[in-house]
Image (cartoon, rainbow, N blue to C red; front, side, top):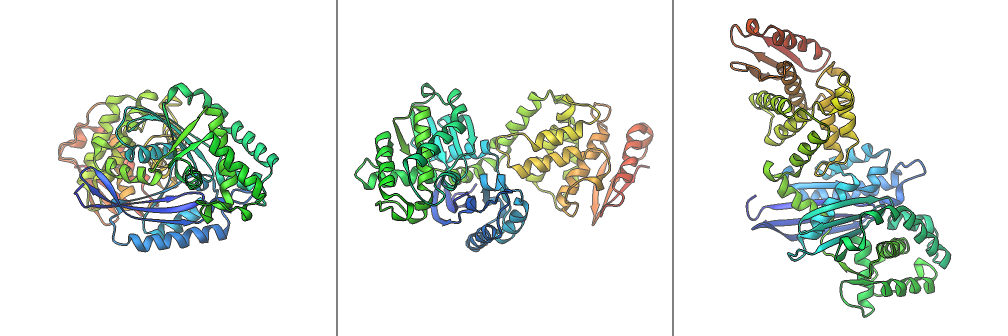
Length: 492
């Protein structure tokens, strides 16, 4: 990464969408611009957990404005991350398809634990270097993330479905504040967060930090009332709740430091924050400057090189957890990437890296069933929390794992995407060539592309020397029939 490079992160939160633009300088990212719009998508989930048309239109309009600001940014320098509302929305693909189009960049829906990891990275990067053991709490619109960490390393991450928007809708639906409503909201939040006690015990951390919307809003109000800057205390929370009870409703709140867009969700936010304070025995919390969007920016730096890409370590961890034959997985990955790199009119280092991960994981499902391992492997990847990966990334790896055998046209995949198709073909050919679980003889073997046609060639005599491999490669021709692509196998 060259000094002066601009990077951008888009955070599609349940309450607000945010755009952070930074400039990379000597290992750090300096803010250049910050935009925030209160979209309240979390309010737009109906009883069937579908986003309403109005909620989608509000989101698309905001993303279009962000997209205009991001025009000209290379794709590798922009990361858009969606969180709990889009994790829940059953019609999220409709929103994401149009949203990615108007933004101009793909939008990654991340899992709760991955959101927590990114939040911690954002918080840690903007804090002074220290060996302190940290608890980070991020109360968003529809989820709350808890993280234990030290320096830049998160040691425990968790995400819970409780947040300021959801709790305000449920317990303060008409904007009315009563003692009974606050009590019910706090008890319900504790019921959701109760399991956090086992991991996030008071002796596991030294300093508590509050990240993002709710913590920032509470900190601002308490500071405006004469409290210490950037500090939240139990006494401050008691005082703030009492002020809300006196106001009786959200539209009658008169608090210096409370922004207008926070008025409708402050009741739910305070209820959740009080529940966290009580459960985890917190006396004082520092308001952190970093958040998810900064974590996404620094994650772009880490992803730039294979050696610093957390996803590589995650893949190795999954291989160990599911008892993958490491030697064979590396053999298939090496062969697949060699073929892919030979046919690179539309290849890339990033695409090759993702193919390598998929090939290393192609037998991850064997622990469950050998005969159906490709399907089980795809299911595992679709339903695992894998640090560094977004949900769509894992799904794409899963499709590659599932597609290692069988008819290609039966895959629910985008066969119009030439990079994905080349990844899939390279994987399938590598699995066939390595069928004997030993290094294949690939000398003189080459893969070429001509439009929608792939041509696999071998040196003279190769098919005679390796008849079983030649048979499997010729069978592969049938697998690509009735697809937009053709495979030609030339084995003299």
